[in-house]
Image (tube, rainbow, N blue to C red; front, top):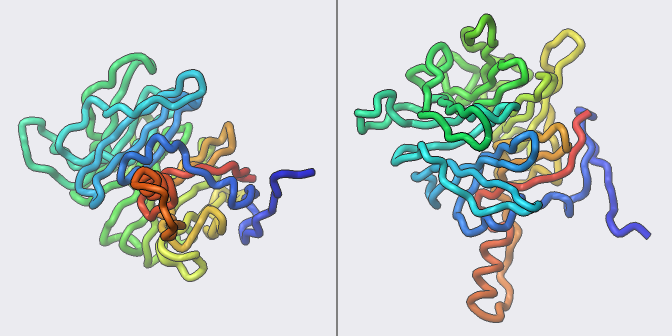
Length: 308
């Protein structure tokens, strides 16, 4: 007799199949001790992950790494280059030796004043080596505007979010081609991806054949921010993005997708809320319930999902 009921999600795009609501799980309950946990990426071997930890109001933002030993995630450790400035939105390259991230740190270490948000990176020789000092990715990607959420395909093409007066709306998704050892001028993705509203937090697949990202308050959405997907057609053009649907999207905020293509697992951040007042045995029972449940704070969730 089946103990788990598998249902098929009916999606406009026909790109996805997924399991039922019971299969959308928190990544690791060890992270419940932190107020806001967001932005997730994981190494190809599945033994190292990078996450953003933030204060309740988001005014403090730091990057941490967690490592897996004997099939169990260890305690998170602060990345050594983090200081009093904001650090968020990590993305690890396929070989695990370059970590992209976003920061408002100044270009000059002798300056104490923060700047706009730029895309930065650190390098290492191998996973046991120390990270380098942060390096600003520079022009033409970074500008005097805010750049966010870097994601890189296997051929080094880079996708990111920018709020520009030349875009379609408030936040838009841009693409930078890697050619002859450098990045070319950023290109605004077309109306099949961007709109007059908000589009942000794009994850690009390894072969650059599909893109996952968040749209905010769309008419066909569940509410707040929803995850959408677009896939390229036979001519290499992006199809019209479609809503991934429930149970991944809820009436609350879903954002910061990361897809493990090898294991077909989607990781994402959500502010979903599904707790109610009950009778508690004691204060410890109260604390456990508030911390571990879907309490409206940013948490990392995961689900098995096949992107066709």
